[in-house]
Length: 163
Image (cartoon, rainbow, N blue to C red; front, top):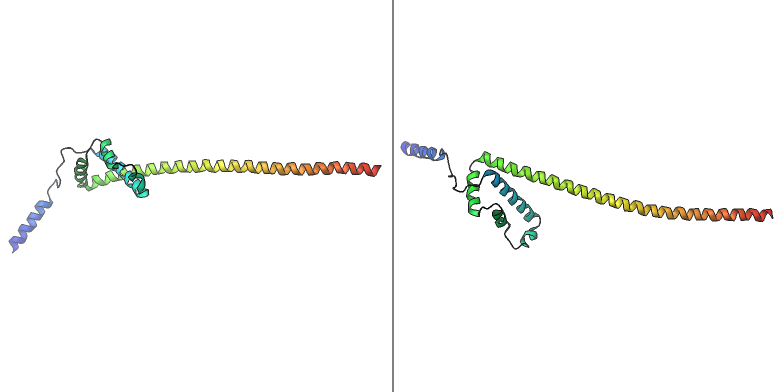
């Protein structure tokens, strides 16, 4: 019984201590290109999540477009992805790079939206000021007209009293 347990434990240790759990593929995608592909796929997934009909209306498979863009095929991507995922720390670094790029683009997009909102707000304020200026000008003109009429009436009244 002890021999069987020893054999099973030895076999388990031998198999688990193997250096390469997954062999390096013949057509391995470079890490930088893999990060670019993962970034593009992440953007596509985000677009699909936010507005599912936008990608469906294109009548093409977006992943095929990405694979064509980077001149890889789906099998090459899958095998490279499995290979890189066996190294947890390296794979985490790759995903951290993708997250950094997404956050950078998100900040850039938020800055553009804020600038557009500020521009729109300034445009509305300018229109509001012009409207208020025209309204106040007409009120001032109306008051001046009343004052002028009263001034005209007042001297005429004084002249009548003098006579």
